[in-house]
Length: 206
Image (cartoon, rainbow, N blue to C red; front, side, top):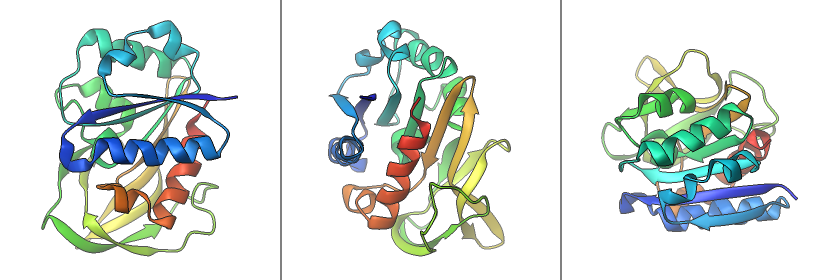
């Protein structure tokens, strides 16, 4: 049985506990054993992390110590997968550039706050998005700094700017999946979002 660790906390506006339990439930539905932790100290045991198949951070903003961050970075470099959503992975630990490099992007702004926008599937075809059509979502629309090395699986538009929404990349031997959707539990539970994110988590797992 594959094993995953879901670590949640940080800014409460993103409903970290509720979203973490949705993601954990999706993983259990795929046959994973899942541990939930509400402290970043769960990341200190480097040997444990290296034997996991997947880490799912759900921790918006906040501070992380080197003793918490470095074991996670090392584990992913050595093949443990990492996957997450919205600010829980893409706006965490704003002063940690190596973490941002691993993720492949970092939140910059969500103009207009809660808006209705379209998530467009593509351009890169993937089993993660297969069968999902473009869809509308009412949520924060993330404008992000992004790594040009990411493989973009879904996008959104800000005027003439095409902004990645969902992507994959590698970090050392580890697989990385990220989706900027998932501001709150209701968005994370949308069928299109949950299907895409569940597949992404499974894909990222060792």
